[in-house]
Amino acid sequence: ATPAAIMVGTGRAAELGVLFRKGEALETLSHVDTVLFDKTGTLTEGRPVLVDLVETTPDEALRLAAALEGGSEHPLARAIVGAAQEKRLDLPQVDDFRAIAGHGIEGRVGGRLIRVGARRFLEGEGIALGDLADRAAELEGAGRTVVYVSADDRALGLLAIADRAKPEAKAVVAALHKRGVSVAMVTGDGRATARAVADQLGIDEVHAEVLPQDKAQVVTDLQGQGHRVAFIGDGINDAPALAQADVGIALASGTDIAIEAADVTLTRGQLGEAVTALMTARRTLGNIR
Ligand code: ADP
Ligand code: MG
Image: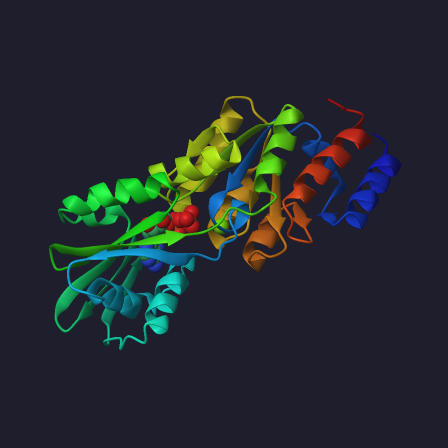
């Protein structure tokens, strides 16, 4: 396409809420055959809510988890702290707080070492989950994110957190499929949870339990197989993948770091704008498929 045609294309896209940083990205997007979506905050609302609590001593796991999560900026932290506030629980003081990216958090409460996080985090520390793991499987099958709580080397309970899929997500996946684009999900969340959400949305390929520093590697691997990849995300965690992708697409509702790493911003934060972006690119470059 001529530079003038590219300018018309990016101008048209801007009117529709899709901001291209450079004309080149419009051209690259016209060749994209694979779209990778971050899960939390991109395919889902990113407003997690505590929906289930399994514990032996009433409110003990919730109280300890909320005390620790007060020091965390993770989206799951809000759900846990919010639930404790609603129950008006008094939260104990936490010392030596530490966040372990992609795994969870830990800290000391009254001399006990408390851990809050993913199954792989607690099991990696040698903590047996016993019956809790069976309850978790059921909850994860329904798309809940399960977070475990332990004190020293004993599991105290689990918290199940729900984050609704965005209303337009399923239709966006279907629209991309219809245009011959493969769709996959990338998330730090557990396999069963990710699979359940993907099934709801009609996504076949899932990359779960991906550590924040490894999201970009998923993009690189697909590129190595000859794919042209767009990555759509909103978080700080997504920035390396947004930069590595042939076209990085950030939601305007996302963090500044994600927007800066991306080539395209969806200014209304609507996933449907991603389909608009793709179609505008293909029309401009004359690659209608
Ligand atoms: P996501 O892609 O969902 O943002 P992350 O890499 O941030 O994933 O986290 C992956 C998993 O690690 C979470 O699903 C959770 O099990 C665990 N985790 C991380 N941070 C926390 C936290 N502050 N509290 C509880 N669990 C956490
Ligand atoms: Mg996210």
